[in-house]
Image 1: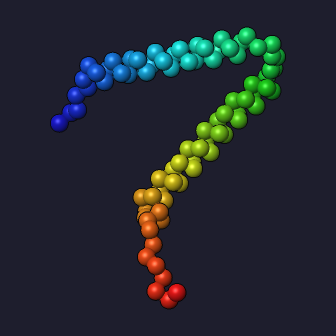
Image 2 (image 1 turned 90 degrees about the horizontal axis):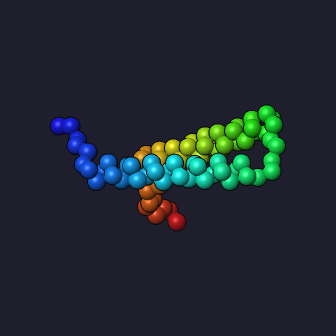
Image 3 (image 1 turned 180 degrees about the vertical axis):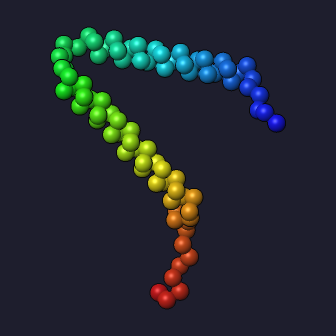
Length: 82
């Protein structure tokens, strides 16, 4: 059975898209108002740093997810020899 998307879900998605568009617009306006001259090397460094940050955070979240799924985060019984 195919899940149906209700009007409330569509309204929420539209609202969140509008908030995202407003945030991007505000960030671009604020960034352009600063007296900065990045040049090509500055843009490459900015984009590279952002991509590496996203890659690192995604990798760490994936490792936490796998650790939880495989039971490494479960409580261990006490050691009977101690």
